[in-house]
Length: 162
Image 1 (cartoon, rainbow, N blue to C red):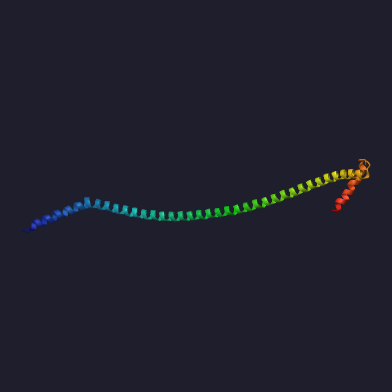
Image 2: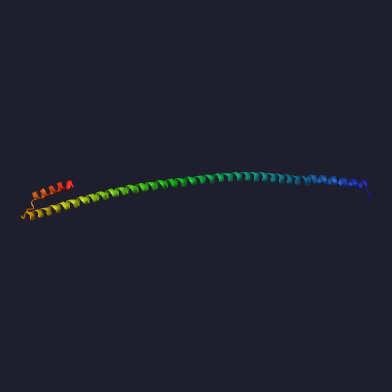
């Protein structure tokens, strides 16, 4: 192998010239592109971190909203139960009042019918008493209003004692 200083110097000069040209025209733009790429990657990483933080906060907000909705739903259900219980109690109470009213009306109607029947019976009994008395006396008793009044009065006295 043969070593020559001139070829070493020429190789060194060629290397330095190539380095100077590459540094001026190739390395500068290449390093600039690489720096821009590095900044872009850092920016995207920062944006991704921010997006992840926003997503986490959004998930937390959604969890809180869901819990709030569940609580509201449970409150609505409880209110519905209470309202239903109150309405049931009101319906039962109104049914009791209505049944009591109907019963009272029925008792009044029965009493009225009883009174009518007693009055009719008294009238018939008075007429029958007059017929019986006239047969017993074997004479005709007139159907004078005064006599019927006396019979009615007597029946009322007898009816009042029993």
